[in-house]
Each structure stands twice: as C-alpha cells, then as structure tokens.
Image (tube, rainbow, N blue to C red; front, side, top):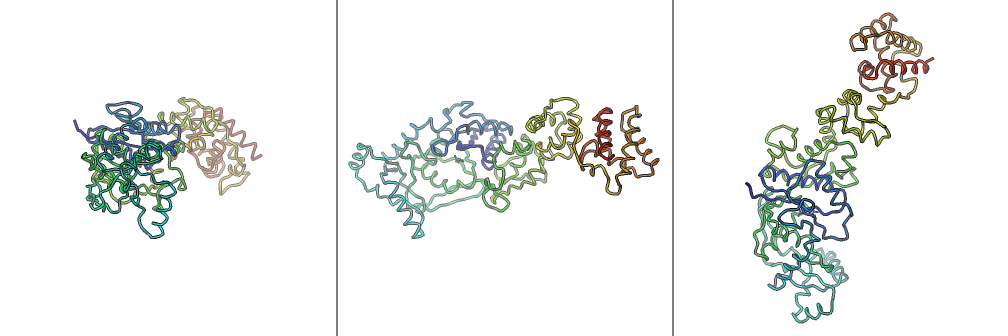
Length: 481
Ligand code: GLU
C-alpha cells in the first residue's frame, strides 16, 4: 500500500472550470497510479465568492468524468470535516499558537490605511508589502485593542532575511527571497482563515504527501513553506502543473467560449473525450499514442512527465477526440446518450432499435451529441426543403420529375426491401431513362432527408421503410410538378 495522499481543493465558486478539473484529474491519476488516496476538500473560506450549489456542481462534474474520490465532504473519511468552513477552530487555534511564539502578530490597520500604503508602493514601483506598523504595538496595547473589540487580522511574521526553497517535482528547485514575501494575513477580520493558512493546516492534518496544483499557485508556495517551518511541520512535495491557456496564450477564460465542465456536457462532449483531452493538457505519455481511457491514463501517468510550459486548450483537438469516441462507442450506448439532446430539441423520441439504426447511420459523421437532432431529425419527421434541393447540379426540373416518378414506380414494385435489389433496380431505371445513376439517386436522397449532405439514399430508405419512402417521394413529386 502506498502512503501517497493527494487532494483537489476547489473553491466553490460555480461550475468548475476545465483548468481546475485538469488539476483534479492529475491528482486523481497520480493517486491511482501510485495506489494512494485522492481526497476532495472544499475551500470555502472566501465568503464573498461563494456560489450556492457549487459543491454539487463540482461533484457532478467529476463523477460525470468518472473521477471518484476516497475521502471528501460527501463521502466522509478519517479527517472529516472536509469543508474548511467547518474547521474554523482549528485554524484559529494554530494562528494563536504562532502569536504566542512570536511568529505571528495582530494587525489593527484599517482597510483605508492599507489601501493608501499599497497605492504609495505602487507609485514608487515597489512590491506591495505590509509595513509592520502593528508589530510595534506592545502586548498591553494589543490586549487593550482586543478588549475594545477593534477589528483586526492575524499576520505571519515572515523571517525577512532568509531565502525559501522547495523542490518542485515538475520544475526542480524553486527559490524565493523572503524579502519579497509579504507578512501574509492568516486570519481575516471575519474570523475566517485565508487560503494560505487553511491550506497549510489542512494539508498537514489530512496527511497530504503531494500538492499538485496549477502554476498560478507557485508564488503562494514559499508562503506555505514559511508557515510549515513556523509550525515545525514537514512540508509535502509540490508539483506545479502548467497553466491551461487559450490559443492566444492568455489565461483561458469565459471570453474564449465554454470553460465549465457542465457547458461541455451540454455542448455534447463525451466524458471519455474530455478526460482524454484534459490529460494531455500538460502531460504526454512516453510514446506517440493519443487515445487513453481513464484506466490507461492512471497506468501511464507519471508526474515527472508533466511539462513546464503552458498547455493550449485547442477546441479542434477536443472535437477530434469527441468524434473519435463517438465513432468508437457502441451504437446502442451512443443512442442512449443522445436521447436528452433530442428531448432538448423538442423531439419526443424514446430508445428503440429504430433509433439505434438511425444513429448507426450518422455515427461516423457526428462530432458532438448536440448535432444529433439536426442529423437525425428527418428519421422522425418528414423533412421540409426547397424544391431546388431535389435537382442535381447537372440536371433540370423535367429530368428530376421523370427520375422521381420512375423511382416511385420502381420502389413501389420492389418486394425485397434490401440494399442490392434496390441498387440494381434503380440503376437499371436510370439506364432506361438515359440518365446517370446520380440523377435518380440524388433526388431520392434529397426527398428522403431534405438535406444536401446525409447518409446515402439506400441506407436511409432501408431504415425508413417502404411506406414512408413512398410517401416522401410523393411529396417530392408534388414539389416538382
Ligand atoms: N482553493 C484553491 C483553488 O481554488 C486551491 C489551490 C491549491 O490547490 O492549493 O484552486
């Protein structure tokens, strides 16, 4: 049994972003690869940014992708509670311990004072830093202010003269001069801990061995290491995965289109495709293979193979993966997954063998499930279209009229409703009329589908059945007459 314990620590601020889910996936894969445990911890200490229902949205997204966790707020575990708002006493106790040891201090500075200080530092092109005014307060002064109920925070006293280093599993040695690390707030005036404080205390108490997160957190890591040192705890191992970027190399955000997992689900992406795609955002296997199931990814995934440079979120690649998985899953499975999309488009269709046959015909060309109503609609309702559609490029109305009539007569007489006899009879009919096969097959296909691109005329005719085909041919004839 491995002792690896990793965590995904989302802040519940809405539909989870694919960048965050990529982080969750890397943690999950690392846990499964090493036989360790994957933990979910909800980091809800920023009360202003909370969005109701986010916890559920996070669980739903992960479960939809097939990512399951061993411990978490909803499944419990040995370190419960796994929601930070339920662990406030623990953070406070530890912050007070640091105050006792002289490693942290109360700060009573007003927001206005801090704001002015920041502005002055900005103008002077200096890094924003607290000026440690409250460090000069005597113990008595602090007690007086506390007794008077003055609003305050607790700050860490960063040992300024040192350098903080850590070994990043992806980036190697990373070092920061403490002189640029601010005296970070540990406990806010509302009594809630800051991210830094809660993260360190929880990672320690939850026995987290590896912190795998996106590069945007790398500047927080020295602060965390300083905190670990102040507590006298061993820090976990760190791995900062590259950021997920838009094609213009800026941080992927809403203005680039869909970014939420739920959005991709609604756009008709398969979880298998999204997982496979997300795994490749910053990671690659040893060989050239691109298609991996979640289990295969877990087998291959090595944190050392995660690269440093930003990973581009390329929608075309995601579409490619989606098309691949759509083509490769069982048709019956695909048909079932399509149902909610048909329903959303107002089509009242239930699962049936007929639906399966229709889906089988469009499976090759479907890129997202969202295209299903458009690709399948004509199987369920006679299409409406312009008369021009019936006329092939190098033909005319008269020829098309003759062709459709002939087609109708031939198919009406056809007793064996299968591919080869249909094919032979219609080709013979074209020869008889002195026209090309296409001049009869195009109008037939157009009459059946109402589309310029669709599966072939025979395939569609076979699935629709004789009666429906004849009816649609009659409608087409009415259009050209
Ligand atoms: N709550 C942070 C987030 O929203 C967690 C960062 C970390 O993994 O330490 O991503």
